[in-house]
Image (tube, rainbow, N blue to C red):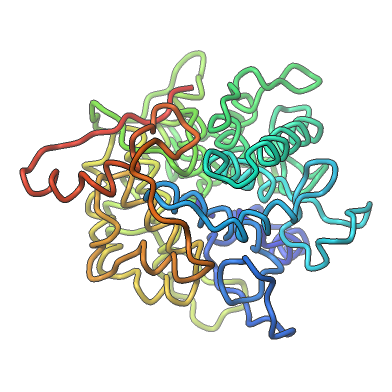
Length: 416
């Protein structure tokens, strides 16, 4: 998820200049304060939305629905207003009333996550038909820009990468489309693209991992961010995935005929080993930085927790979740809505109460970053996924009782 895998066009451009194939920054990377001093009504967060406006809005929606809240109509209208007439989304459009044109930088990541978010809120939206139209238009547009290899790049026409492809797979699965049937003009599916980024178990440094993209020499280099995203996608799931049952220790196995699901389980094995070293993932220093030490990567650690839980390895994810409970507060406060959302989704994936996340009430903190959401709905499911139905009720009514009597409550993740 996690992972402006997620909307940092500036970083993407810099990566091209530097010739790197590294994954893009974490979803919740902080933005500078907007120079205009005024943000649009309905938008979550207070920082410059240029590179992550649609992304953070969408993640906030998904986390709110996962905890039973319906975003305010004003917030939903803002996201709907960001969509171009062809169904696509840019990372952010300051002049939303101006029609998109050839100069508008359409963003596959923003489009995919907005499609998923709108699908999640449509049931209680003021105009569900309008939301349905937006979801269909977004999904249709994604098909038109699918690369021949079955995957997607960050921008239209860009080379496919594991992160962008995975985000689209999650959106398709959440809206009832089977990713495996979403074939390109050459008959290639998103899973074909994902398998092209998978490292074999025999790889010395990255057994089972996924690369973001091949480097200039065509070599695949293990990337934890890409691995967390592709693990979910290979299982046919997205960022709102929940804990799979029964649990199974992750292991890496190469098949004569690789499958996306096996590659995903191999990815979980890589993540489990990476987290076991320190309890969290790390990020290398930026090129030219004076401080060359690695730093804790809070956002991608949260994504890895979701991926492991979805792969049936919640036990292996628990130490990382506990690390997040102790060490994520300052990062989330600085980073804003997307950060709170990532933590909520990590808590959800491991059956942890996000209202008692260490010393933080993540739900209250997220809700405070945007227009006040509607009163929690306890009468019906509020997610866009059939298997997640009833989850809202469990969070709002049942979690105290579940914890109190010590009853385990497992929610199966989405199936392909």
